[in-house]
Amino acid sequence: MSPAKTSSAPSRGRIDKREAILSAAFTVFARQGYAQACVKEIAKEAGVAKPTVYNHLTDKANLFREAMTAAADRSLAESLAVIETLTVPRDDDLRALLEDVGFRLLKVHGDPRSCALRRLVYAEVSWAPDLLDAVQGRGSDRITEALADRMARLSLAGRLRQADPVQAAEQFLALLTGPVATRTRMGTRDATDEELREVTQAAVDTFLRAYTPVA
Image (cartoon, rainbow, N blue to C red; front, side):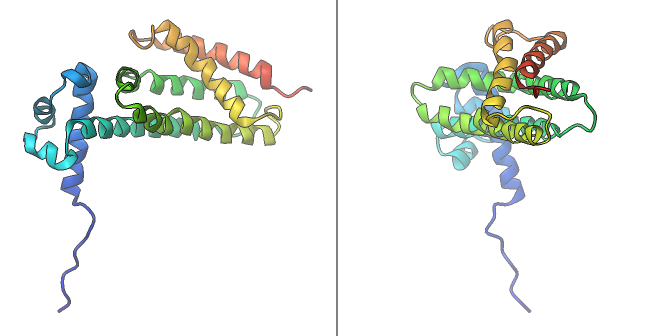
């Protein structure tokens, strides 16, 4: 009889428990800030014993960093899923497609987790400067890169004028997020869907004025 195979990968239960701890940690940090949050409360939120938190994440500072990057990864995955739908349209209605993608990107950008993530980064960057690079690398940098790829495809198809796709992506995102930051007072109030659609339509209008190929 051959010996039973053992896996070096973490068990599913251990992974699930770690994810539960990170989710609970982000909830508590978002509610109370880093300084006021305590591991005991995070353990209670996660439904585990306090030593279990330390067994998985070693200390509060590491727990904070891991919770932040996990939240950034979730927001990134949602944004990338939206950007994947930005394909070359078969008809002439590029405006409608850009408006749909822009609106859904703003919904992700303005959801409570994303807003809390930005607030926490700004609040704690003085003692954790590496956090800014870690979160930005999982957020705006990756989103810009993915969107630039779609802009390049639209240019090759003749739907947008030939231009630097990274610059086009950056400008499209700025046209979306800039007005929303002002209207929501840096994420301290919610924007209605009507406001988001208004911002998106204005952003797409300006973007297409700049990037529509000259006939």
